[in-house]
Amino acid sequence: MCIILRNGYIDMYKIFLNVVLILFVALFAGCFSKKKFADLNIDKVHELSIVNTRKAQINSCKNSKVIIVATYLNPIKISLLKNDKENFIVGIYIDKQNQAKNLNPFYKILLNNDNEIDMIKKIDKDSIYMKMIPLVNKWADYYLIQFPKKDTKKLALVFQTNNGSKALLAFEKEF
Image (tube, rainbow, N blue to C red; front, side):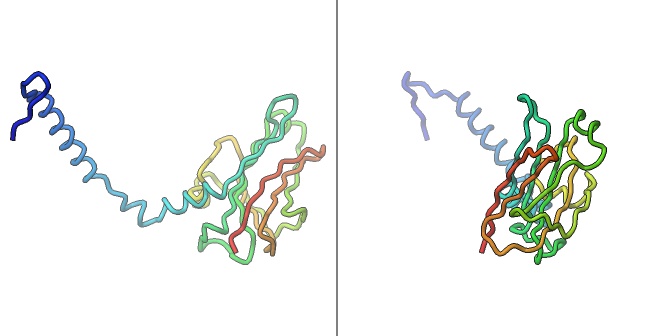
């Protein structure tokens, strides 16, 4: 086989580089394995958690005072959770000045304007639940929150401070 370039010469150096590059890519592509992730099905969990994660913030004078990141866990179908509840992991970052002023919890969380919460549990950063969410802020506190099951397709998670500021995170359920 002969390769003729525009100037009539065979450029063996370019051919050699292309062959080496193809062999290099093939070698490393064959060595990479997703087996560890496939066993845990991490890719599917992260895909679903990204789709079901929302972020909101409450600002004061153009500064973020509170940042909320919530992941709706029910679509992920995790065996650790009760399916007869609406399950969320909520990350809350409150700036240092607001934390210092408010020693008591100064916020409430509502689901579809209902303040009934079945369970709220603080989650450690090394908890298995933390592996289910796509974004972890090292300065935030994370909570597993369970609400009573809602029969509506749309869910509105509202974070409200004691001064009336609100952040709304909207989710949609699969039926």
